Image (tube, rainbow, N blue to C red):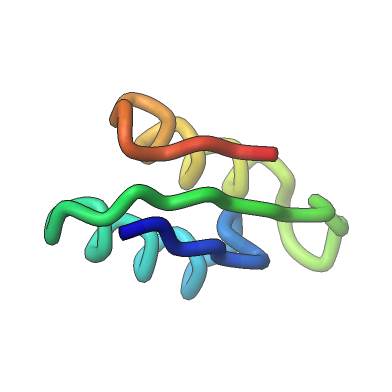
Length: 58
């Protein structure tokens, strides 16, 4: 099953995406990368997800 997650680079979005990937879901993520908090942290969150073939950032 495919799931679309908005805000996937943030704490909540990246955590949910990771859990869904663990359960076999295909996750498509969207994020606008606002600087509400450190963009470096957002890129770190995404680096963990992007290693998985079931994750795609658009």
